[in-house]
Length: 480
Image 1 (cartoon, one colour):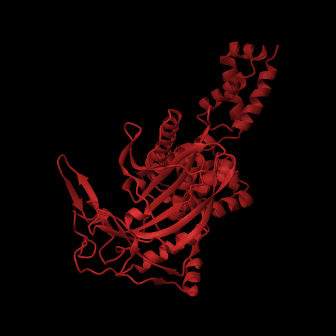
Image 2 (image 1 turned 120 degrees about the vertical axis):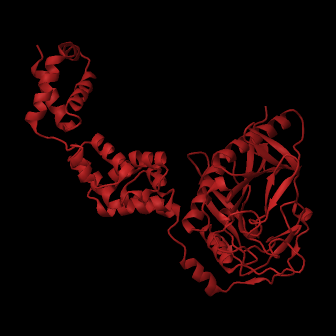
Image 3 (image 1 turned 30 degrees about the vertical axis):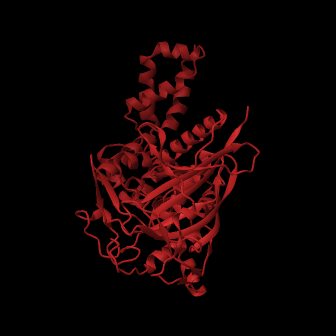
């Protein structure tokens, strides 16, 4: 039986965070527009005679992304007309880039299958304009032109990925880079970042590129993974039954978990690309490109490597902390205020801290880094127990406040007084003779139960390490 492998390439569309649209001065902030068709003008609605002017900021941001993806910046690049008709395209064509994009021939390393690294080539990074937004009603559609003309960056990979896991890692890393650079919010629910997966399958060991399908407008990582996996399996079934895969554009029905045909897949010649006559070529100087390079921050992969080497974190710990720039910066700020080790701080942030962030849907800096450092240090130096620390952290998220004050108000200070702990131990041993017999008979797991009883009796105040030590001693003294 023939074994098949997928061949996957991704096209990623990200709206650029600029004040104005790509080719006019209308506001690009269509999300906060009070009503449809407010942020419009003759240029972005495609009226005859309107002349476009390229947005300098959008060009700078596009070059920044290209450099972050290890691309070469084309000093001479041009705009082109991409001709096709669709109701949300006001001019009947889209101003884009094709033969001479702003950046090309880059790469990114991704996890191929959870173990092995794969270098995915980036074919090009180019600038274009977003379409209007269609609102479909029962028997008609309404068009909102507020989004038409918003700067859109398209990142096109080569078909180098052979697993859904690799495609997912590539998409995740692209999103992180765009957010680190501040060029895109990464808010996929709002449609500002969208994935399109080009998928074909072939026999394992073959180098041919068979007919592919393109799954359009995937707006979540979950949708990307599910749609890609479904399409891979669908194509394999077609070949196994002796059929042929049609080159077509597909949609993804998330509710039913299936891809659906939208139209035949266009090739470049179907769009009849030709140079945009109303826009001159872009001429980028070496000095201009160098000025953009200076703006590059420490990117996620470099930061991850530094966290591993400088703070002795595992790769998974470092990747979690560097997944968002705000979280990475917060982690380093906590370190600057704390006596505890980075490893301990990492454990707290990855555990209780992230749990509260997700439950309350708040940002990391909702608790001052200095306050979190103080709390973690109080647990480390045994001023309070770990459980008490969790209680204090939850209270800090709910109502703010100084951790030391919360400990005082709730009477959570940990007790290391042997006589206090011995008193609690004696009472628990006196009240549980049968459990003592079982422990002495070999059920040593009961030790933790005894320690837990002390914690309960002292409301978590007893030092757990000292409690365990004294409990062992008490149990041995009662051995017959």
